[in-house]
Amino acid sequence: MPTSNLKVALIPLDMKLGDADYNLSQIKEMVGRTDLDTDIVVLPEMCTTGYTVDPQLLERFIEPTSGRSISFLKELSKDRHVALCGTFACSDSGHNYNRGFFIDPDTERITYYDKRHLFTAGRENMLYTRGMAESPIIGFRGWNIKMSICYDLRFPVWNRNISCGYDLLIIPANWPEARSYAWKQLLIARAIENQAYIAGCNRLGEDPYGSYNHDISHIFDHRGYDITEKENGRGLICATLDGGKLDRDRLRFAPWRDQDDFSLFVD
Image (tube, rainbow, N blue to C red; front, side, top):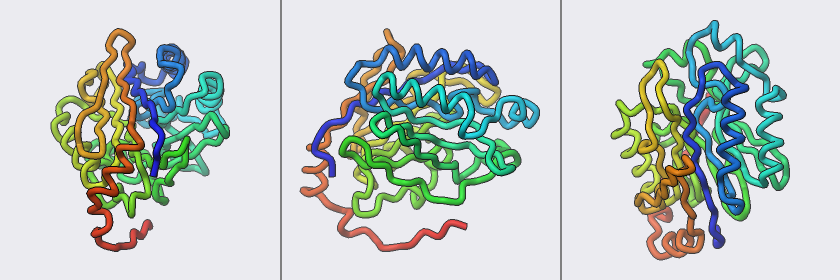
């Protein structure tokens, strides 16, 4: 369990669909606005190109993990000494994935997670291959961190925190305002049931699937309280996560000790 604090910034972006050059330049500018002591920057789903289920558009901008976008973000992470987390459209072994990344500036290691629950109502499953592995727990600066991607949030078993295995759940998303009530309630539920901090980062602006504003990106503490600090002058959403308080609260009130045992099979 963490005893130090962790400073997290969410960066909602008004992305241009299919324009990686513009979106990467925006990411660089916005990361430059964060405080120097920021530990993690969370970006929206498909932050480099915008979210799409258009096969012709996807064919033009999809990249391998060794592509320009990840190389650019890795250098940015190293230069600013801040972890970067988001997702991008990835081509790997003949399959398309909505692939999450966590770039650790301390080790220069990149951890990947392929979105498991594809949004069938929006035909995401027709274009992308679902992930075949659980999201790994990432150790970073004394904290254990897990990632889910957008629609994954709706599935509590997928996000279940076994014996306080993770301290922070990060969720890059493209979740429009039309369903913002469900989004917020699900974030709160995941925080309370898992006794973990939750950081959910959406995009800004509009795309073919809806509209998005600053008020639908949130950071909740392990009790479900909103600890978001909106810094609209810089376009950032920030919070400092109190590791000592999380540790004390988990020991004082410990439903995780009474949780049901189960095994999750991924096929």
